[in-house]
Image 1 (cartoon, rainbow, N blue to C red):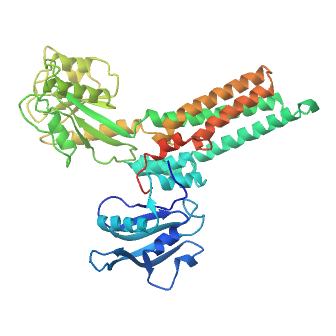
Image 2 (tube, rainbow, N blue to C red):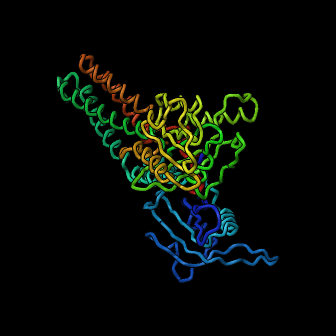
Image 3 (cartoon, one colour):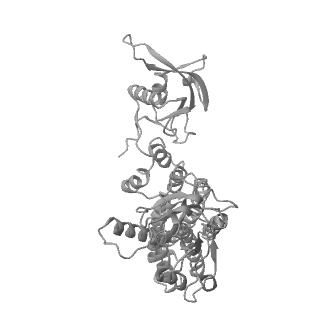
Length: 473
């Protein structure tokens, strides 16, 4: 999959134009590749560097003229000549003008000088294989790249700094020490030397099992709570969902608003204002088609109903919109009377108009716990609704022990198998079945924990992890 002896290069800055662009290189041939294209402003030579350094100069690119003249591009070279670099091999970053055509031309010139384009995630893969970071930290790099909110960024940064690697390493060291003592006892079984007592073995297996359980709990916490909180507007046609959506999501693509029923066919998505007061997750607002029961399944209206139902099923909170200017219909009354399977906010719309809600003695304001009164026209209640949604998002926020999603998904099964192996080892110890069986189970637990941190891996695991990276990382 990867040819790790090659010198690789890639654009490492964000796509699009900018004041500065970065091209990154790594490999044993970095110095020769860079010197083929770079001229320093001073007498300083990159080849003389024995420590990280910055050299100003110019990149020479083939020009468009028939005489083959070179175009000079101002640049700085950030050079790491030793194994103290990110990949533990010579690394260079060329910082220059952030014009996409110029960066593409620079990349072509570097490849012509002996480098090759990097594969997705290849820089981080080399750092992992060189022992610079473990697999959980490599996935944290991807978590940083993909973070779409402050909390996601904080979780990924903590994991990259070793927040998960350290307890994993401590657990592995403890089990390796335990296995060494068990195997030493097996080597000297005929000498009648006890390297570890049954009571001590029980305690150490128990400690390891508790550590695995704590790590598994952190993984579960991360996967049970999504980083994005989804608030879905539902209600009968023409109750004012789209008007409410447009006011709450100012600046987003607007929903069409009309008195004609069924105007909204597809769902629209927008972000609420950035959360305030430390709310950990961003809030996504989703406008759906009005609820109707008479549409044919294969008609546009029927497809809109299915789409609305799917969005409602995936919601973290349902925002049930009720038109305050007319009596409630049967579906609306059932929404109020039926116990909700998920968080639900009942919202009265059009509260700037005369009230016409009460019907047949049914007063939703009396039968429901909380109803928010709003008006998209006057703005009444919009801030209260926004705060109610964000308060629900805060209640379900990930805890401090969270890990990035990729790690949680990949590691869940390995931690389960490690826990099972330790449980069997503890049972074998209590039944005095012999240290050979206990040692075999400890080896299995170590192998599964090794998969989590990358001490045990296969090419398909690495491909699965690093193929999701963008090129240049």
